[in-house]
Length: 145
Image (cartoon, rainbow, N blue to C red):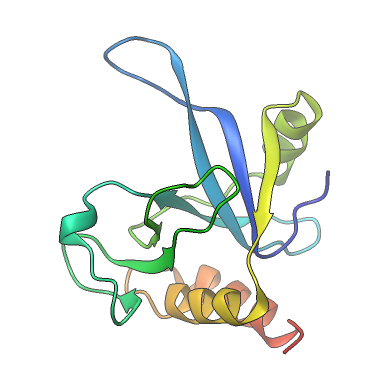
């Protein structure tokens, strides 16, 4: 599976729960997938819904900067935000390995208007690195309108 900008993916073993030691799943979105380079991703969350703004959907404020995606479907049945706190990029090799093992599964692809707004918000987030901002804006510039 090749990473696609705007894809919402589910990683079934994204992190280890420190309380149980069990692997836990996480949803994430690909914001930039430059050839031969790390992927710029952001996690999705439905936690702390009462503390996250919905209108306007783009918020860079503390304590939970994010972009409100609504209730996207595809397994995401609660109000969901693109989490814009600092995030490491995903190594392309790790992505390929985990996808080949079936740990990463496509969930949905955002529609163009929502994707463009989410990417613009993510690129402007204060915690985005200069590299991440550039790659997101480059990916945004070639998306169909």
